[in-house]
Image 1 (tube, rainbow, N blue to C red):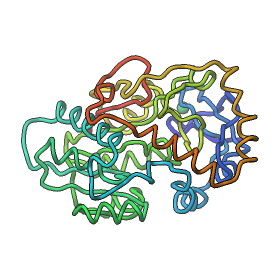
Image 2 (image 1 turned 135 degrees about the horizontal axis):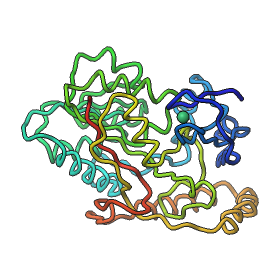
Image 3 (image 1 turned 90 degrees about the vertical axis):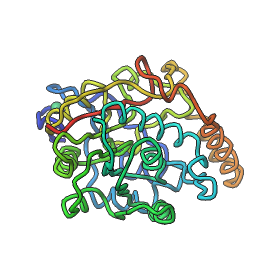
Image 4 (image 1 turned 90 degrees about the horizontal axis):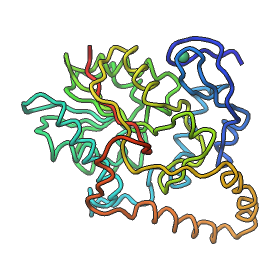
Length: 322
Ligand SMILES: [Zn+2]
């Protein structure tokens, strides 16, 4: 295990604990891995890292199988209110961007990892956009985005950004950075695709060190490490963006508040998994459906999505191209 830090290239990385997987597909990729902290910059990252080919395959076939990304709720007829979780997140993100954007109009915006397009939709409602571009790999999402009339690039950002003629005023990238094997390279490409003083808005899960040892408890908080490559605190996210040529204008915790459950309670799920394996598959799917539905039962305006500071489940950051 001789991997260098994904932010600062330093070695060694210090092992914190085994990587927690949840599903067989994740176990096959990350089962023998550990979480490691860089002694130099503090970034927490998985070691060893899977190859790009293995990850591409995983996102193509397995990622949405277990209801990740709310794939079971997108409904074009009710869009963007089909998923009020994404709706609130989109509008709170667009609000924050509007506060940091110089007055003007005809902004060109792109969303890297656009999903079903809730953020681009909110940007269109809050800002005067001349162009909204979605970069998204999921075939299901691409169909949905195209039906919504957006310009869609159906390939990973690292494959399309360099070839695009556009120079964007704003690029958003939410819940993507922590999945990347080479975050610096993609941030560099995004920087090159921005206009002078263009803005990047990044959101990632908020995973400060204490949440790795104890476990955060929230309906929307990840209960496993799968399939993340990096695990950010406000400091390590800010540090990475600064090293990639950005000036960080805003970085704070966002979204609903975490609670912490004790290590003892966190170690309990093992017998539950055994129990789940004994249940008929259809009944298990039914139970999962109930919990997935509970997670997206959100009001049309959920105030906690618009609040910042304290121990919240995301980090939201606005950075300007230097
Ligand atoms: Zn480092």
